[in-house]
Amino acid sequence: MELIVALIAMAFAAAVGVTFLVLGCALYDNWWPMFVLIFYFLSPLPTVISKRMSDSLDTASSACVELAIFITTGIVISAIGLPVVLAHVNTIDWGACALVLAGNLVVFLTILGYFFVFGNEDLDYSSW
Image (cartoon, rainbow, N blue to C red; front, side, top):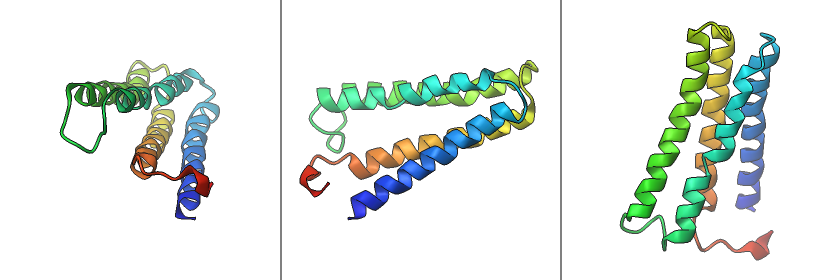
């Protein structure tokens, strides 16, 4: 039951994060920050691939896991840097940048929470 509650909470948090992103675009009538969605889709991929390639993320560190963490960090930093650079060159307003950064924070914390909750190998899918 607690997994279902966690899943619902993460879905709500992801919806709030994407709402911040859409508000940052719609209120300032500039849709350039929507390119951050690409980073949302790319950020969990290195971790998912490294979990398939290595035995476990909980045991001693391996090169595959370290590379996945490095690539994921680069993707997250790029998602944070894109709206800041767009605001710096006056492509978007700083208010839109703040809303997009708030959305980034919520979405990436949701993705991190997903890997904490559902990252273990002992998950029983029959409880769904």
